Length: 307
Image (cartoon, rainbow, N blue to C red):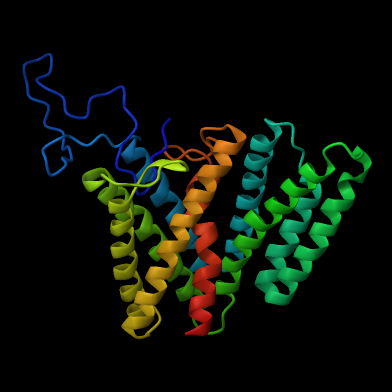
């Protein structure tokens, strides 16, 4: 299974040629194949039909929860928290780092539930208590590796439950919370889609070769354009706001999404894993799919709160 960066220009080689010649029966293979401007066939680097199907299934699940009983969405995020903790624990364990899994699971769940039902104060209050519990949990293991282990635990608290908590703060906004959350998701997904296709079609100039070698400036341009367009449309149609707010939201979310993807790339490089897991067919681990959304959530919440 391969994982292609959203702004990638150089795709991993696939064992199956995406531009096949005549088949054994003498018939020309008529599968639709993307080509770069110079005529070179595009290698997608992953099973696109499977990835798209998985993404659509996830989107349908989220929308169903939002338009029926919104508290169901909290349960979905709690499940996502459990999977994310498992994936990070697996990655850290490969290097001998132990995170405080039980306090993180219990405290992270309290953070999410508190964010939805009580708001910002409960989210950050539960965050503080979870951090204290993680620091205390590791005391019995002695001094050797204490800072390493609790550092990984504190990172995990911030990276997964705190970032997910901002999704619930968006949803908990009076009057238009559901619309704000949907707008945030659409704009962030637009970043992935715009960056992916611009990267594989036009990507030439590396953006961050030491972090994510396949990410290109052309892909970044596609992400930015797609985000701004999606931001304008969602803000005007869903939130009844002005176009400039949509442009600001799109630009801010695009930058946050790119940073989120780079952060996850460094996590995988540092821990020596190719994918965070195999939870999602066609995507890898759950955190491989949520990397942009995790970092973009607080940014979208802040932009919509201020403007």
